[in-house]
Amino acid sequence: MIRFGTWLVAVLSAAAGAVSAQTPLERGKYLVEGILTCGNCHTPRMQGGALDTARLHAGGPQSWETSEYKVKGANITPDRETGIGGWSANDVLRAIRDGVRPNGQQLAPQMPYGYYKIFTPADLEAVVVYVRSLPAVSGKVTASVYKVAKMHVDIPGGADQPMPESTMKDPVKRGFYLVTIGHCMECHSPRMDGRSDLTALGKGGEKFEGPWGVSVSRNITSHPVPRRLERRRDQARDHARRRQGRQEAAAADGLRLVRAHDRARPRRDRRLPADGAAFGMTALAPGGATFLRARRGLLPDLRDQLRILHGGAAERAVEPRQGSGMIFGIGLELRAAARRALRADPADTELHAGLSEMISEGSKTVTAARGIMTAFLFPFICSRNP
Image (tube, rainbow, N blue to C red; front, side):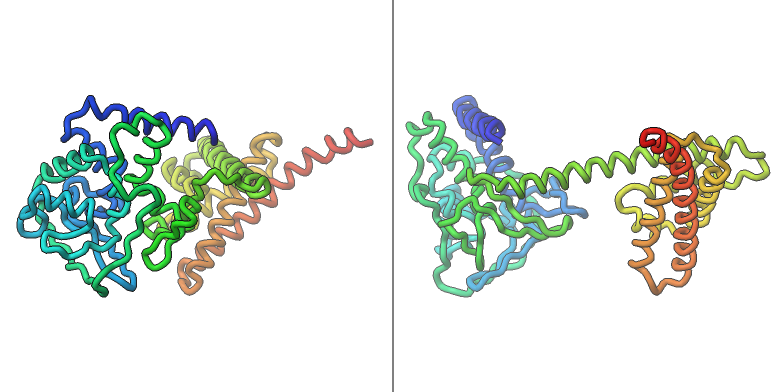
């Protein structure tokens, strides 16, 4: 963690030190598209949540509502009808630094201008230059609703005045500057009704909802993680990694066994094409229950694959040390996936019948493979423990 922190400070320091080598337009692009993350709020998103870079900064889809305002990410391209094409350079500058529209209306502090008061004059000018250079994109956004005359604005301590250029040689102060304009603490601090708890900066705990579900910001302070929690987290990560590795190995070896057994059978008895076996093995991956529900037409093939596997196991036609373990894993995973799919759609009678057969064949496969392993291991254990 210490090495990561050192690396992060080095990267941020190098980025800040490169200012003199950049034109205002280049610097502005770096800030807006990088550390300021303006596109997270101001850019439309495609299916799945990815930013629609073809309509960069033409207005975001998210809405935020507190007791003081209800807003969406505005169109900040130079489009005169739906964006800020009618704003002067000074209008854009005042909106970023002071949070006011050209008509004097206060902007909602969902726009983190409280964190932008620390901007050096050169960086603020660079941001304005880049924003005004964007292609004009038409994108109408729902008008903001302001519920109070004056809205509360969070301003972190020490960030209420522009940072003097002379202090940027100090790596700690330069890091403070970059972390502030990147408004890291806005996400990594507890918030209530749109207000950050400035007494707990970096503590984490803010929830974010999206296509991925709900994520919670981490504690990025120097407070050590309790060893007990750290150990549990590491154990959970290692368990998940081992489980994924077992699933991938079982899928690959199981597919090899099915195809080898299928090739050895008379042609008239072959029921499963190779691609059918491949489809079947994908059910071993995470999300297998969803796969089974969506591809119910493959259930008969999967059932037949399991019959081939436990038939071979019952006939002792597999190598005990490897084949039986893989067959055991395949049966176990397919049976578990079928049970999860059954619980998800208990009222679907057609699916219920197919999944019930899957569960039955999976149980037979597990039992047959377990019999081989037991027969192989029992004499070995007895010889080691006379």
